[in-house]
Length: 143
Image (cartoon, rainbow, N blue to C red; front, side, top):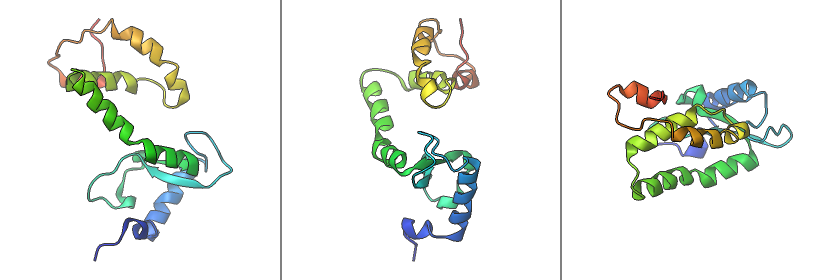
């Protein structure tokens, strides 16, 4: 019989991985930088069929309980955002290019301050289809 998710979180392999991630993140919430409250290790997204300890470290991040709850409650916003943009007439290829621009921003609050600059760059980008898909994904611009 398959273990429940909460039973899997008690597995020694998860506990070891969890501790490794918290040590990497210096026992600090990577969202609000809290070091005083209870910390959790958050899976940025789930991959069907993987056990909690089978994820690469870059898909795991230390969050305080408050930030972890917020992430869990709001993770559908990203999917909803993409659906709204697609229903508004944007093409998936345009969303991939937008994602490439966003990936160039610094992570965290400081990245948000650069969004205005990224929007200004939007008008300078050649949005025509490019033959090299790697260029599309990396967000290199044709100026």
